[in-house]
Image (cartoon, rainbow, N blue to C red; front, top):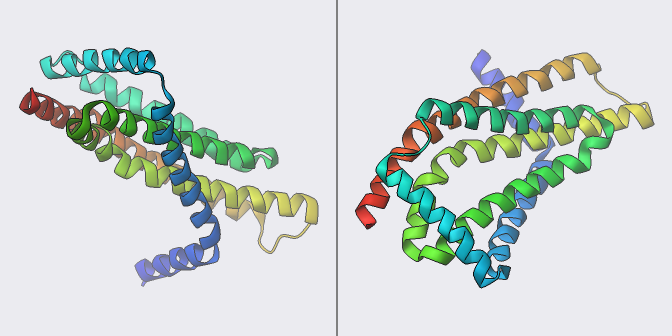
Length: 213
């Protein structure tokens, strides 16, 4: 019964705020497309410099000289947690709404640029490398970013409505604790993604590099 209750609450939430979730998803996808387009605007020398550093990294990955899995886990976890934490804090502040959207758009640009550059420079091998080194952890990270951004936008809009319109249908404190709980859940998923990035992706990356060399 309790499980079905939570499912109904989640379903009602996504239905009530479907337009916000749709907007956030489209914004992120626009960032991905924009990031991929930026690759084509780079000069030949810029591409050569980036590809040189990329080749150095892949060479180290093939010989097992990359950062230790434990250190990579800590680095990935704190990097993504700080990003999610910043989005969460911006959701509390009234002026943080546009910054949330900008940060999500920038994240989309980063993903689009990385995958676009690999494919542009290495073709099919670049697609395989991005598939094993970027996709696994981002299957968790990207949904977390999108959902957390949407929740932050929703909470920020509620704060704005409460501040300027003096219209609040529900008490603020219970909503704040639900918002805080969503951040805790997001951090748990970030930890899972960090585990994938530090223990699974490097092994897949090394296998693909060695098989293509």
